[in-house]
Figure 1 (tube, helix red, strand yellow):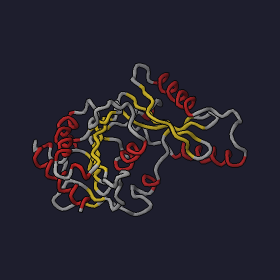
Figure 2: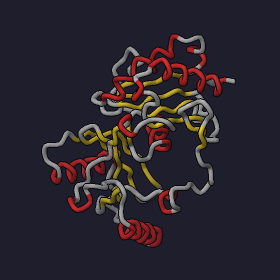
Figure 3: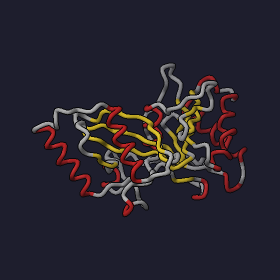
Figure 4: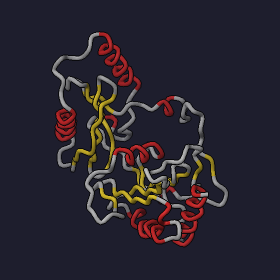
Length: 262
């Protein structure tokens, strides 16, 4: 990919443990082993009968982070059950997204689990490795197309309101709605710090879990801007910002979308 490093901004969540602030959302092997032990114990004996709700689990995480990083703008994003023993709580801290896990009894808070892709040297177990696309700044995924209920491929931009690289590309991306294929795609531009899709007349306040999952799948490091085209192609950062060439960006978008629609 030809984009410059300066064309992206990394937005990892700061950790409430000072010693690992520089690498906040990758837990140590020790913590991962603790999680495994907890799950084994729960499978045998179960956790305490005092089960907390998802909202209560979210408040536990909010309180923990609030006490460790006072003055930060901490907002709840989403919660979901993970198996029979954990809640996954996603937060936004000063516009940065990340997750923590809380046991169902509210007794333990665990930071993000290490993906197997990281343990296996950066390669997913499936062996699918993104490949360059000739004449494009996008990467091909070999994934199946992700479509809405009408069969239209999702064309997504994930950005934030404060990101200058996102501001540079935003209008050009949104102009895809006026192209000849505009009614054949599901175009969405999510400002993940405020949870709004700028391409709707409504002001949303939360990124849907399905969209957030795609962002995290194709950019687990959490940088912006991030583009996903039909889940068959993605790109992290801008391709031509260093040349200040929005025309080239638009052409790359159009060509890649046409590959998905073909």
